[in-house]
Amino acid sequence: MNESIRSILKEHGRLAIEVETLAEAADLYQAGMTSHASVNVMLALESQFDVEFPDRMLRRGVFGSIASIREAVEELTAGR
Image 1 (cartoon, rainbow, N blue to C red):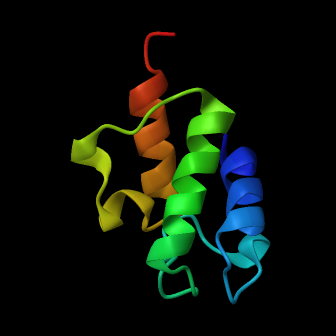
Image 2: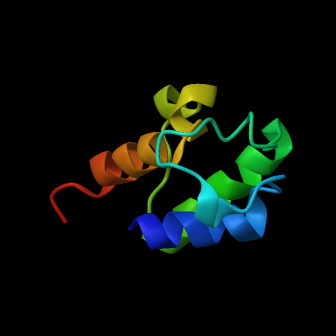
């Protein structure tokens, strides 16, 4: 799952740093991701993992790191 998330971030995150060099807990916003880019990341994640982020997850913190994105996607795909 981390590789899929990194691939999506590389394509849609508009990061100023190579995504391969980021630690899982690194702040993606400090790495250059904008609010607009985070929406594109969210849409790509929804498509990739066939999920829909509920309103309660539409917070900056959910998309703030690779680890937090993975936790959210794991929560949404649990029980499949």
